[in-house]
Length: 146
Image (cartoon, rainbow, N blue to C red; front, side, top):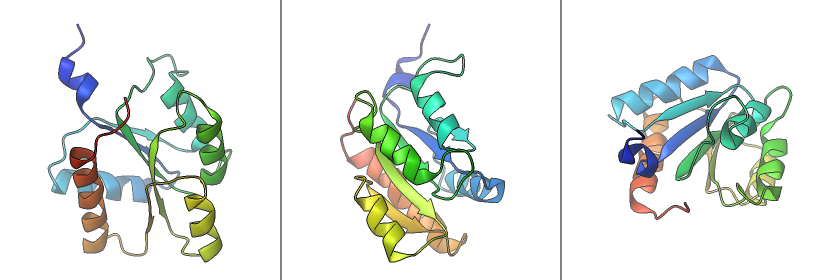
């Protein structure tokens, strides 16, 4: 039987092809004592498959937050954002971009796809932990679509 807490806890989907970044996110989550469920995808295509339940598992049901890198193979972050915003089941997804790019054109393009925030991966230390702490607080304070 499905644990009712599994249905109400905010789930995190990390979409990033850089395993060093993924491990840094996971370490920061552990350091912050965040116990929410976490899934990882190596690119936008795999991220969509997880969200849509196309990997032989059930759909990644709301509420969830996506932490998205932009520069990835197969389907990059911008292509992922376009697909999510076109999908009637996913278009309201709450997505934070976590990227090495601080190019104004990338920031503007991401925000034009209705992201919740843009964080630059310039420091995987304390400022990175603070950014993830903010995302965790966001998930606990803001009412997310279900």
